[in-house]
Image (cartoon, rainbow, N blue to C red; front, top):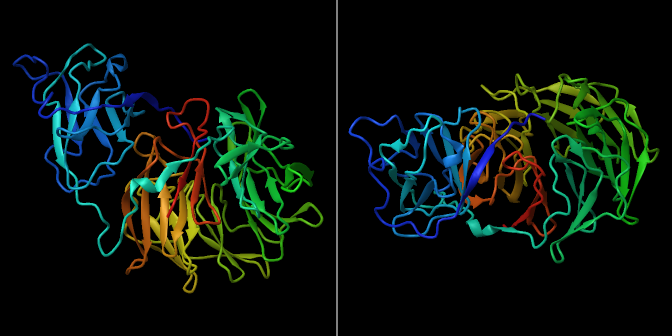
Length: 506
């Protein structure tokens, strides 16, 4: 499932950060240079104009002894004022030499902050930490510039109730009555659930469906049909403990009876595919992956679901390339953009509904493969493609010119398996994601993408942050314009998966 392990050491919950405390020495260090010390600090000591959404990253000269790390091992706060809540993590793949602190409450703009490192830290070989243990930086003024007003942290609030089932790689589907249907997903490691639940804005409540799904499934696809029912197809399930297999089965959820019913199977087993409603009511199913033992085979095959007959049939044409964990976007003129889901290049293409053909379009210059990219459309029909690669590049697609271009304004951090949601006609909110390049770190932060400018859009870091990292979650734009975020991978890669939910109010 392209995941790895992050060890969470503890919560940073400091009531007061005293002025001028803890700095300078290594707790009675000998005159000789210390063996165990902070080799690098980001933000750097003395840095100015630092993004308030920054995470604190400390690189140590030796591996740290995890047993010496406590909730107050790393603190950050305005001198003489309180410290924000945060998570201290050992970054995996660093040989236990890198610590990261993600403040849950965002830092304020135009403030001088101090990072304090506890003198109680020891290396794995028993050396006490020495050298400088205090680092000072100043944040830049808030506000996006150019008339852009950045959303404050208060825009994001937890829902009154939590989900009934923690889950990741699940689906969320907006129903005709305004509720949101959640289905399937991994609940712990390779364990897949067959539970469904609905969210209602009235009381912000989650309710398990009366009946369970016909089959457990994760990494499946879901689409609301024209008659209000929801098609669930494919995905992965656990055939035996620790053994996943891909599925060709499909079922339909009926909101009026709160029941799941089997329909005809797909022509191929597939997970991490895309399902998209066509204008005539049929459903286009593209690509995905098939598990063959421990190997993953990416697919270029395409099939069509007929809701009247309840059957799938092979489409007349396949994709030009394989695509998995990709996106298919309705351009509103009978064309559909297929983008992402490749480990070598972007490979975008256009599906023409009138004849079922696929045609290649030119990818953005210097773009790379994108697994788990997030895609959404602005009100004017232009498309934003975000994340799924290492540089945080944001692409813009202009339907009238059929071109993909690099905005040149990347996200504040690389993000895979993030979400992007339209919160205003020309604005997108990018939420969470995994930084696979920097230690598989699950991001709690959010960016704002504003449409316009010579390159198509500009990205700003925001003060909006989740209390914990969010990735492989869902984001659903509700009828009232709010965005519901729910579930996802446990941010410390433990079990069970996350059952939290949040509402963003534009």
